[in-house]
Length: 255
Image 1 (spheres, rainbow, N blue to C red):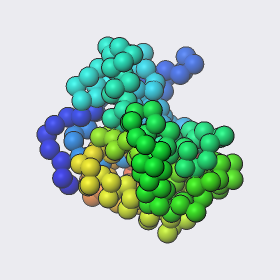
Image 2 (cartoon, rainbow, N blue to C red; image 1 turned 45 degrees about the horizontal axis):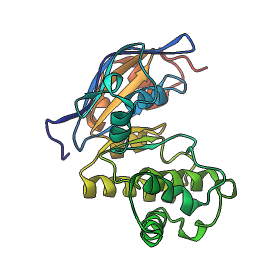
Image 3 (cartoon, rainbow, N blue to C red; image 1 turned 180 degrees about the horizontal axis):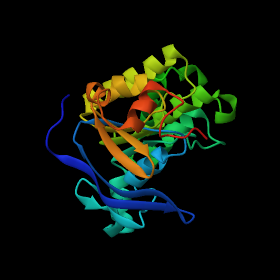
């Protein structure tokens, strides 16, 4: 694990409610530079909510979220925009522009933030499409792509600005094993090449074991630090053991 003591992301006493329903309560965590953390947990427990809260998309009703020492709550519009430029986010549904081609979707953030020629835009975007094996689909719109292809296109766009921190919401959902391996390798390679930090949600324990420096479990409105791939297997919390072993019987009810 190539990390250091620099904290690039922090939640302090964060409580999140959506439509009046408590989702997360008193969450405290720190993420260090160049670290990969992975959130696991039952469906509907709030994994995507904590990801979006850390990325500044959801605002906590209590507590604070800091990115590179900056409090999301206290930033003006311009400063939020500047900070957001340093982040990459892959949403669960991709959040792609339906009327734009694959190439145009990747070009979009580059157009918004960089002054590049049309040739430079196309070259950079095609490099990213090639990395996710979508170069042959550059002229297709999202509705013409499979769910897995849309996810790969979302990854290409999330990496377009060479972000310092990248948030991935279940990046290999809908991918076959070979595509999953390709995507996880791409995520790891980008992290190493750009000295970036990764915050990820995964519904698959093999992905968490492979990618995470530290694993956190979201359950019962809590976010529990469970440790490394080896440490989580010995964690005393019965909810963690039930989840990672895939048992039906245990303290977590299956809805």
